[in-house]
Image 1 (cartoon, rainbow, N blue to C red):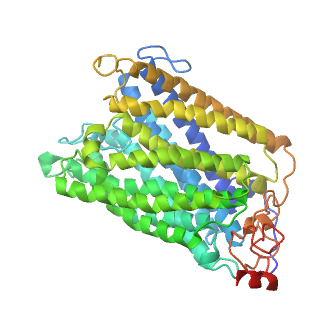
Image 2: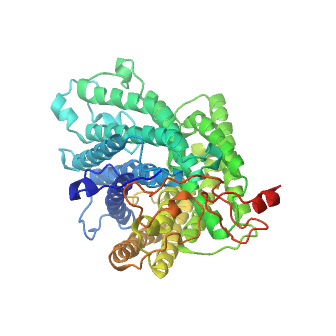
Image 3: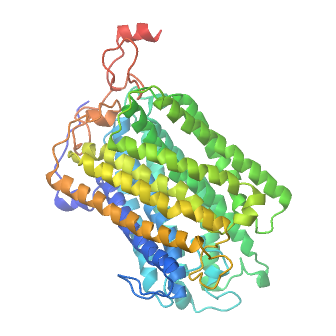
Amino acid sequence: MEHHTHQLNFWQKYFFSTDHKTIGAQYTIVGLMMAAIGGFLAYVFRYNLAFPGENIPLYGSLSAQQYNSFITCHGMIMVFWVAMPILLAGFGNFLIPTMIGTDDMAFPVLNMMSFWIFLLSAIVLVASFFVPGGAFGGGWTMYPPLSANGYLNTEPDFLTAFFSGSSLMLVAVALEFIAMLMGGINFLVTTINKRAKGLTPFKMPLVIWFINLASVIFMFSVGPLVAGAVMLLFDITLGTGFYDPARGGDPILFQHLFWFFGHPEVYVLLLPSLGVLAEIIPVFARKPLFAYRTIIYLALFSAVISVVVWAHHQFIAGIDPRMATFFSIGTIIISIPFAGIFLSFMATLWGGSIRLAVPMMWALGFIALFLIGGLTGLFLGSNAFDIYAHDTYFVVAHFHYTLFPDIFFGFFAAFYYWFPKFTGKNLNETLGKVHFWLTFVFFNCTFFLLFFNGLGGQHRRINDYSAFSNVMQEPYILFEKISTISAILLILTQFIFLYNFFSSLAKGKKADKNLWSANTLEWIADSPPPHGNFKEFPVVYRGPYDYSLPGIEEDFIPQNVPVSEKEKLNRV
């Protein structure tokens, strides 16, 4: 079947495009811009933590209210406006059509609308910094009564209440969720209905499985939080009492509604990055992926369990200890499928002809860091330990060791792997390796010492610890300063990535069509793929991980190459 491309004008190609690749780039660019905002906020409040009361370079003085707003918006931005658009929307748009052998998404116009709604949500969030009272500063989880802006038990003026930091943050989150739901529906319909001929579900690359599974988890878990956010918005603007004990409400209800979505959200972010690892590791180990079907079954099991472990975030909220035990056990159980997935990655590496190219370095760094985050998560899954460590810097270190590899190591692994395909230009490998090592070192220097500060009793969301002489003694003050200096260096390191990106776009060498000798369908398209992706839609004959098969001379066989008689005999 021949696919004919057609010419697009400037606005159709770069702004109001329905091409999935352009939309993926738009999501990624806006996500990186929001990451820059989130990173600057982190620089400001971390500098304040290490050197309280001092003038902050590039910013000035930071009040306690601004500190609360900055640390709240940093968390909100990184989870919802960096991780979600890059890992789910960005990866999904770039990879799904090209890896399943089709021309575009099932609903291109809906796809375009999803991006513009997402962009509107980002604008609303940034605008919340400029309303009277400033951006919301009660923590990224938005627990009432802090998030009610003092309007509980009052008859609020609607306009004043609506144009408050907390209300605008709720509106921004709602818009972002609408965009992600539109994208998730598109991903599922495209994957189910537009796969290439012969591409059965168990011949699909794992990254496609995982992006779609993340979309399903998001769609099934987001409803309670949307309902809870609407009720909170009504409490703020209309004076209702859903979370007001004086009116029969319960603020703990919001915690349940939030975390019923909030914990599955962890796996919404994790699964696409694990899918990226599943594509990269076999390519650079030159081996078939170990236990392909088992990984799929483990991921499906984790998706089911992910919605029944939410209350391990609420061990100090007054829940029944017997119920806390149930959620502790569930937390331990959900670690088992991910342990199996990581063991399959290690089994793939075992005995392989490993090439430490830049994408592979980011993939291995992801595994190393995430294992620390996963193991410390088992500690926090125990209600006995969590009661002591809750809201300390031990928790801060733990979730950065889980989310930072998900968001940034997963993104950079994918970026360095697929950049040549989608731009047609090679990146500078030396700069890529320098970027990796500095990021890896400075990240560990930023967050590993915070485990000790948390165990020493340092609680988060306090802007000046100088009054807590019983806790903030040496070496904890020193650890705080090392963490801050390392965080600043970590942020500065990302300018290496930006230089590599822009210089490669401008003057990078032309990339080979199949730079890494990979099997999946996107590598048979031109670099960069044209509008419509393929001159002729491919037919699939094999799975995505046929590397170094016994008795076969080539160490890779693309999915569109028919199975030979010799190969059939060897497989028997």
